[in-house]
Image (cartoon, rainbow, N blue to C red):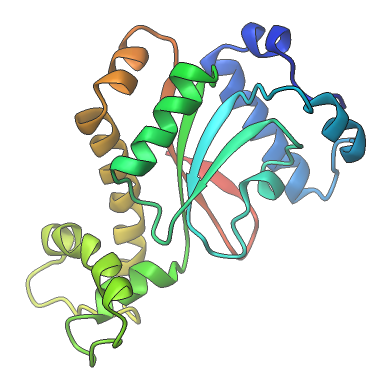
Length: 211
């Protein structure tokens, strides 16, 4: 399988980009990788890159987007941060990927049993971690937690139902923030140039479910 060129990228619609990722995850789950010569793809992309999608995922070592969607060099922009939330720099990276480099799809990819979200749930009841920047990171999830937790419900990472609700709403919140905070991406979506979608990766099965 060859790396994408400007010509092949131009033929991919947002719907087709989504289908490519779904087919890639199906191959991953079945352990049927596409036939790629990665060194040839290095050569193919030596003068440029034409990825068809931007994928925001967690830094979790099990959630490499290139692997779980069975993609090669030059196929996707992979943006990673613990807890897969957006900030101004990540939005800038997405704007570059779509409005400059021509990607047709933005995916916010959450995953089951997310450690960053567990930290957010436990932060109110355990001793601070003693790491200023990590404490700041997990504080991003407090507004979502406060919005979805039920009266009297245990706020804890051991509450599996709450953890997965948080995972789901965290993905939706990131999508909402992309549209609110990036007029560029919002307009591109409204014009049909891109799609912005959410998904969840199951660390036990390898399956990606699109929301």
